[in-house]
Image (cartoon, rainbow, N blue to C red):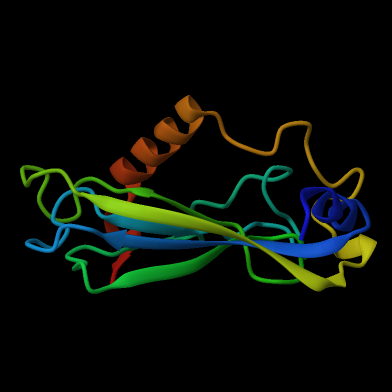
Length: 161
């Protein structure tokens, strides 16, 4: 599909999602330092989503994936335009889960933009006027701060897979 046709489809309300594939590329060693972690966000209000609302840290959960080998791939949906679909899954390296003194991890991430043939009803459109903030992403500094704070506070809230 040509870029102009994609832009037209998005302006018309077509549903899209962002998928991520993450893999350890070190064939000799599983990940032992700062493994990938997913933050499954939960909100206080039904239908709330980032960036208009902040996740509730008391009900949101971390899932860490230490010791992943080069033969494993983690595939996850990070975002969906349709607010009725599961989405809003954050990810980062999470220190302190396995061995902070191990060699740095070597990994590869691939993001895929998927455009569906269905339109999103305006009441469920995360991009509809009035539903999104002027800026829809964390800055690098905010992201690093968020991951650091979460790593420090994770304690009992990390599920290791």
